[in-house]
Image (spheres, rainbow, N blue to C red):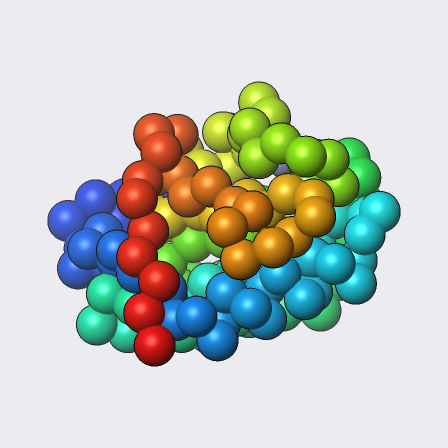
Length: 134
Ligand code: ZN
């Protein structure tokens, strides 16, 4: 599987998300419960603004919900989001493996999917402070 080195890219500068987009994520997480919801994140000028749902995204509770073969090579995609059907957003080993391979910024939401029920991670799995903007 191809490894794409995006380390010198502007997309590494993403540091915020629109409240509207976050709300959409939480609603999708809620409606997928008890399964996981997964999507890709699209950003412009450092702000996550849009979700991309891919056909064939597997909604399950396996924690290995992104297939490497379906990751988009789209230069506005900055990372991924998925929900955990539990009350923790601690990444699994499969999550960390995905984070290392693809994108810069990754969100994990957790039950009960209120606006603060998420954690944001870098590709290295470090926690990032994500600002919520209008
Ligand atoms: Zn996970």
